Amino acid sequence: MHTFLTAALIILPAIVLMFSAYYTFKKRMEGKSVRKVMRVNVMTFLVLIVLVSICAFAVSAANDTVAAPAATPEVVAAAEEAHAADSGNSKGLGLLAAALVTAISGIGGGIAVAAGAPAAIAATSEDPKSFGKSLIFVALGESIALYGVVISILILNKV
Image (cartoon, rainbow, N blue to C red; front, top):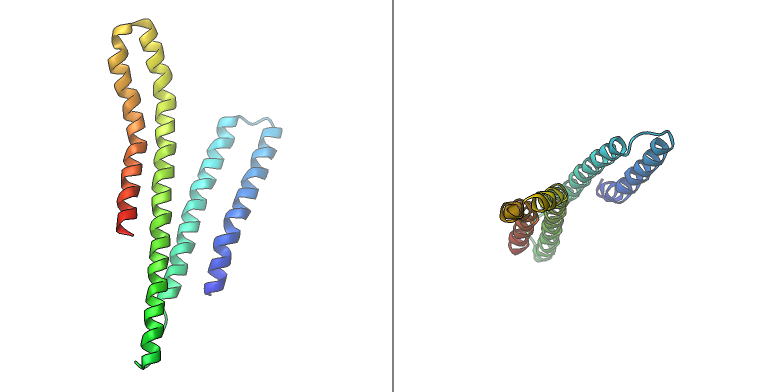
């Protein structure tokens, strides 16, 4: 079971990304709008993140469900090695969580700045006194990414 889950964790993202690329190419050749195609790609990416997370947790749980044999010195040494391996699994999940927090907050901050910065430039060109107010809205969009980095630092300190 453990080998199957590890293989699924490796193969599943590759299959989903190939399907997503094929779907994008097919729909663009049919003349569909970029917005609709990108919506499907973003949803595919989010589903992929959820599936990979589930597989990672399943692999971690499969490692935790080992039956406890009699307590001999060899078994105690093996249990200590298994505990060290389990802490490696939790460290890996912590690193995965930190990466996801940073990536998703960076994408969100980029979307916010992409919407706010052109509007701020337009408002400043019409009325130079509105520069300070416009700058605040752009900085709020950038702060989303900074919050993600702070959370990922907190996660890395716990790992």
